[in-house]
Image (cartoon, rainbow, N blue to C red; front, side):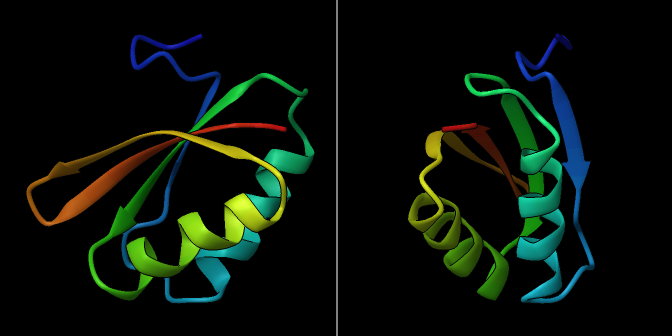
Length: 78
């Protein structure tokens, strides 16, 4: 686990919807239940849509933190 408290990190800054959700979903599929994925997303559409879609897939959003013009999202695989 990294110092961020996540098992893996996915930097999706500059990646448009819905590709950023697809990449997040694929990464979560490779992880074990209970593991934490840190996802870095742009503000606007990505931070509005990706967390909602992740929850619909049965995963849990642990933390959302704004850092400058992007967000760090911590997701626990369900």
